Length: 280
Ligand SMILES: Cc1cc2nc3c(=O)[nH]c(=O)nc-3n(C[C@H](O)[C@H](O)[C@H](O)COP(=O)(O)O)c2cc1C
Image (cartoon, rainbow, N blue to C red; front, side, top):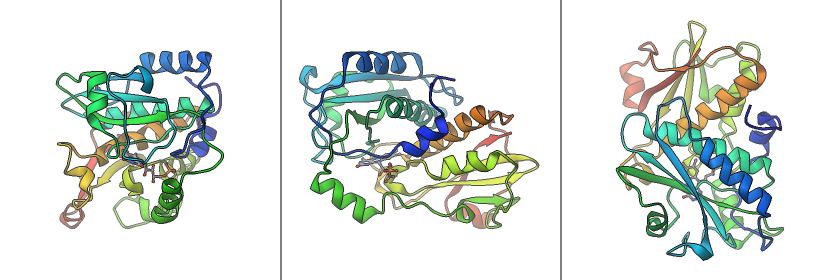
C-alpha cells in the first residue's frame, strides 16, 4: 500500500480547502509530495499521466484561480495523453495524489474549471495531452475566505446523495439493500468522494456478484462542454480510486475490468447513463 495511514481514514478526512495559511510547506514534505507525484502515475485505465509541482514564485506565469483559492503558493497539476480512458485514468491518479497530500496534513482542492489554464500550460507544456485539473497544496488557514464560506453554504459541498439513490441491485432504480460484506465500506468511500460541482454522477449496479459502474452525464453541465472532454469522466476515475484502494485495504477480492453486461434500458440511456467499468 502506498500510504502509511488507513486510506479509508484519509478518504474520510479529505475535504476541499480553498483558503491557505502563510505557513510554508516544509522541505521534507515538499520532497515527499514531489516523489509521490513522480512515482504514482499508474492507473487501471491505461492512461498516460504526468504531474508537476509548481511554486507560484518560480512559475514562468503566476498561477491564478479567479479568486476561488486564497493564499496558496504551491500547486500540483497533471496532464494526460489524449485518447482511450484518459479522463478516468487521470481522475484515479490525481485522486491518489490528493489522498497522499491529506496524509501529509496538507490541504488540496480539485480545480477543473476555476483556474487560469495559460499559466499551467506554460509550466507543463502539454503535448498531445489534456491538462484537465490542478490543485493548490498547503496548510489550511484557520479562517475561511468569504468566497469559500459562500461556496460551502451555497453548494452544500458536504452533502451527498443517499446510498439508495446511487447503488442498485440488478438494475438501475432498485436500491441495493445488502452489499456483500466489506464492499459496503468500499461503496461508502465512493459516495463520500469529491466530484465536479458535487454532482456525484456515479451509479453502481450489482449483477452476478460484480459491481458495474455507470456515469450519469449531466448534459447541461458546462464543465462537460467547455474543454473538449467530459469533465464528469474524471469523477468516475475518482470513484474507481476510492473503491479500489478501500477494497485493497479491506482485502476484498477483485479488480477493475471493462467487460460489463448490457444492463441499461433505453430509458436509462436517455437519462444520460453510460457504462464505465466493472469491479469483480
Ligand atoms: C473533477 C473536479 C473538478 C472540480 N473543479 C472545481 C473548480 O473548478 N473549482 C472549485 O472551487 N472546486 C472544484 N471542484 C471541487 C468540488 O466542488 C468539490 O469536490 C465538491 O463540491 C465536494 O466538496 P468536498 O471536496 O469538500 O468534499 C472540483 C472537483 C472535481 C472532482
